[in-house]
Amino acid sequence: AQSVSQHNHHVILSEAASLELGCNYSYGGTVNLFWYVQYPGQHLQLLLKYFSGDPLVKGIKGFEAEFIKSKFSFNLRKPSVQWSDTAEYFCAVNGMNNNDLRFGAGTRLTVKP
Amino acid sequence: GAVVSQHPSRVICKSGTSVKIECRSLDFQATTMFWYRQFPKKSLMLMATSNEGSKATYEQGVEKDKFLINHASLTLSTLTVTSAHPEDSSFYICSVPGPTDTQYFGPGTRLTVL
Image (cartoon, rainbow over all chains, first blue to last red; front, side):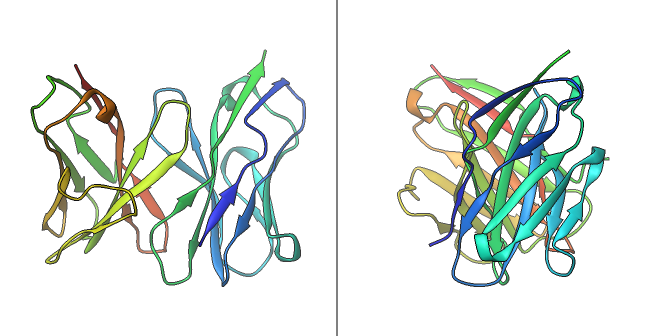
């Protein structure tokens, strides 16, 4: 069965610090990988996605993620966070022929001004 | 603009009553929609897959008689929480698959059962 693990439950950073949020998945086939963000009081928004090709994908707002197939990982990174990045971040995976997403538990990011 | 809408955004009901939540795909037709439940400070859990023209597919542990799903048209799916109890209080979110294998999420409906 598919599963997604996010190891960091709550990350607290100061502005301008670098960010890396871990995501590992378990799935016996080809997958599509996603990072979603949920700002306080708002609905889920897609940050970036990986389907195939270059394993380093760039998303909105300066975020990027690297797919490492051998490690079953898809970590999210940002070189310099801002206060406005305070939000909940969810890693998700679906199989190539499945539309439904399986989410990780989420990581709450708090950026201190 | 919004791709997926949900109505209502908030609902408070008494225990034992039923509540209907609508999910509309605004930009494209959807033969499939998904319903998720989000517990406080936790991730989204897939509840069921809503299928236009056929029965919904429920995830293990989700009571299909309690959470009735009707995919009335290619742009509308409804989730009815029947005989609601306080433990059903949660944030319910629907999603619609987009044309590029990307899910578009609705804004969610917060249900509070007194």
